[in-house]
Length: 425
Image (cartoon, rainbow, N blue to C red; front, side, top):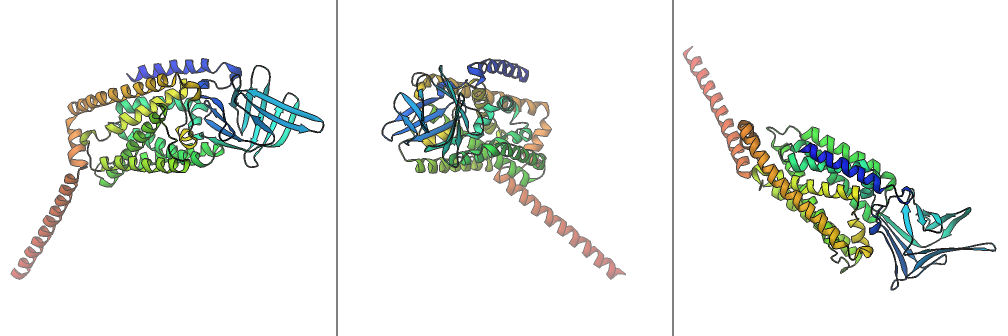
């Protein structure tokens, strides 16, 4: 069955390569999610790049003009006046690298570099170079997600690992734990940073650090036989990953189904995001700590998290992705998808639900099959070696105390016997 999923992934890869061959090789698989909009109430111009997951907010200033139809960059240099106007309906904007953007339409193409720290831009148009133009703007990135789009192999691996986890994650929990630890730490840290500042220069260091951390945790906890502390650590990891995945999935579809996030101001939205994030993770930890799911203790995390990896990976490969962080922070909307957003959201929702149901059924059968195949191992894992329930822990402590008492009685008996022998002598 695993081979069928690999074949599917190969087909998706071919589809992805065809999607990326248009529009002068610029990334365009998610163009429908991009938009430009003039906010008349605040007198500002907003741009959301659906492909690169970037949000730009222009304030009213001397060198930029905008309205409901267009945005214009204006600049005077000696006796020459430059006016580059881009119509909202026929303009595409793409991100290259290092704060460089391409504004393109059927008439001309302009390269604009944003000096993030100085709040200035430089424009390269035809043979004209205009440097250090003062413009008031804000720019926000979702670098941690865009990396999966920028480097397709990452998103393909995310799908592949997700497939492994939904099939065998609850049994081969030690291998699956590497992916859970990586995904949890990478997106947890990445989301926090994305809320407040860009970090595109350091994103690969974060990826490497999280991967190293996942490998380290695997080697430290891969053999939990006879160690209650290691078992507790594994349960904590799976509980936290389960709660985190449920939270990310809930937030994702809350936004995808176009529910409002603008009923409170930005600071409260960010506070509520982290508050509920902590609550969901805490609930997941508590459920695993008290071993609510018994022998299926790793199945919920495998089904929910694995389905999330597959769904997000597919979106990064074929399109349909968006940044929930940017949408929450800036109260963004699916402006160009008013008629299609329900189709997109329902499609991916049903895909993920189907994956979850399939995973639960398959893994329950797989665990039962393993019980029949090698019942002694299952008995040892669930009862003798890994006491995970509170009652089991109590029993272990009682047994340990009993062993200590027997050992003490034995030593006392031997001492009494020695005393008798001494007296006889």
